[in-house]
Length: 158
Image (cartoon, rainbow, N blue to C red):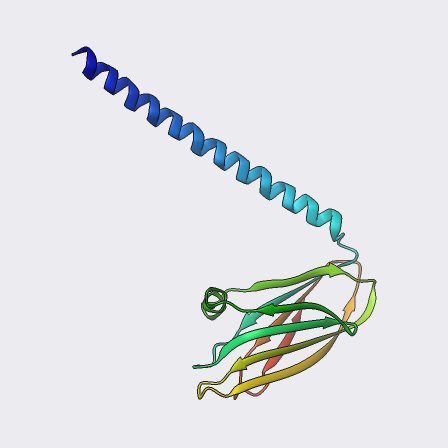
């Protein structure tokens, strides 16, 4: 009976340790998230912050392969899409593709995307948009619609 009691105590202790480890993991993740937010506030103060987001209006059969973003003529992002990222966008996800600093005033954003149509043909689209940066953070959504939907790239600001 002594062995059985020792096994029970060991199982209870292991379960208790496992619960403590899970709590520590939660604390570490919480601290990590707070540090990331503080770092972002330091690197990108609200009076100069600009963020560019990508969303996707799924055109059946269209596949987004790559995206280039230029700000005032300077390339700030070149992104190649993975299957998982494309799936997330198709399911309504929004990707933050760029965060940076700009001065107040007018700025030109240019977007080029490369993809494949449902028939397998390569499709390339380019669009530009003027944004006006104020003292608050500027958020710009780039909605990629693919081929055959009128405006293949739409811009929305917040």
